[in-house]
Length: 251
Image 1 (spheres, helix red, strand yellow):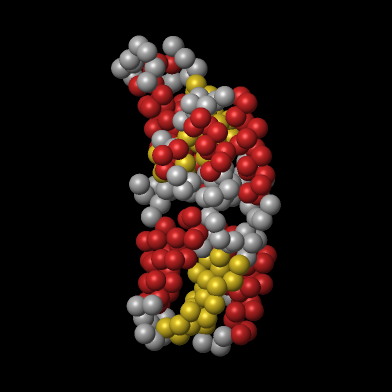
Image 2 (cartoon, one colour; image 1 turned 120 degrees about the vertical axis):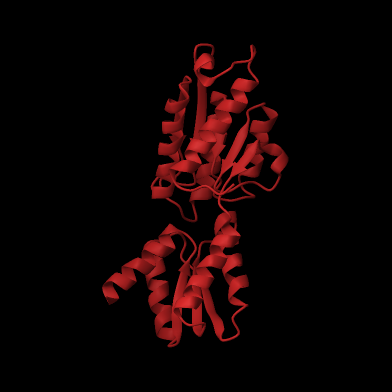
């Protein structure tokens, strides 16, 4: 499913609510009818709470819950920022929230592998989990996944750069540590597409650790090291922000 910004949160809230309400006796004809029968609590955990994309997921989920007319409370939390330590923080948060026994968990896992044991605990407790943006490896543990086509996104980024550069020159990419499926797929799509252009080369892939400051530094180093560099692809917001800082300063 190809969704973005607040639409992702809206789709998640609607899907979870519809799933829970259809399973609640007696059968309800609409969300408004269900609202008088049960109050639902959804825990929304994102990989960080400062990224504008994550903020929009929360906003979209709350707006859709209100639109449904059902009695739904959405509790949003997660690590304050992304980076190397955010995965362990997110695991701890998800495990702690299990004791509340929410009606559903909406999860944007920072790491596909690391969050799976926690999701398995929710499955064992009978709590439905919907993954948003990223997912876990064992899809039998979750109700659904809502995300973009990240392979296609990476490929389109490569095509855009190549077209602007007249299909000549070197390119590079800024990536976060491996383990986040969306950014892994964006990079894979980008690199696969670049192989289609015989007069273009990939100069390197630098890790920015989810830091716009480090992304800016990495880009400066790439520009100095590769005189024929025609473009750099940032696989997430922080990489793109670092690139924007450099282009703004450079004029």
